[in-house]
Length: 178
Image (cartoon, rainbow, N blue to C red; front, side, top):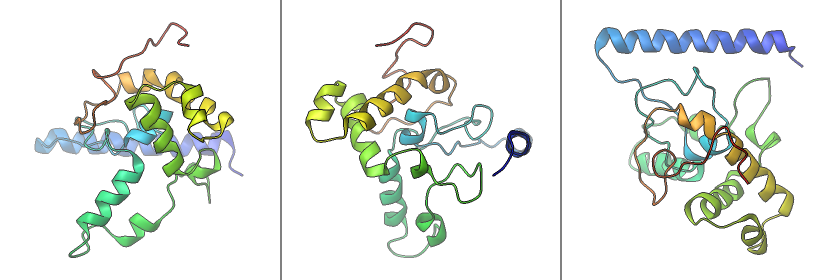
């Protein structure tokens, strides 16, 4: 178990890497792309001034399950994305052996709740009635609502679904929502 200090040192180190990438971007006139997908941005599994830094959020409107499908499609003729990247369990890598599903439902469940709530505009009761576990639905909706402040600071993304975060969907940041 890492201490808060050790985690902090790791996060500062990753932020320094981001500054290095931003510096290279500026030096060579390149656009730094962020790596966050819609699922991670929805529930706040991203770090301000860390992995959220960049000029364009290319996959910010793709749920995690679609990102995996797209990666497999890209590799359908020849391997471009290493298979180990696709097969590795998703992790914020804040501690050894930590995976996203330690604190989140499986991404197919998360993405279904995300689609119902954000894209289709369903409330918690309708999502629960469709067969999802009540506690999970309420927790995911809460995470989506309380992480609006992070999404407001995210790089602009490419809209590929009917409802993207950003200009397409805004909720209050400082006033209690719901």
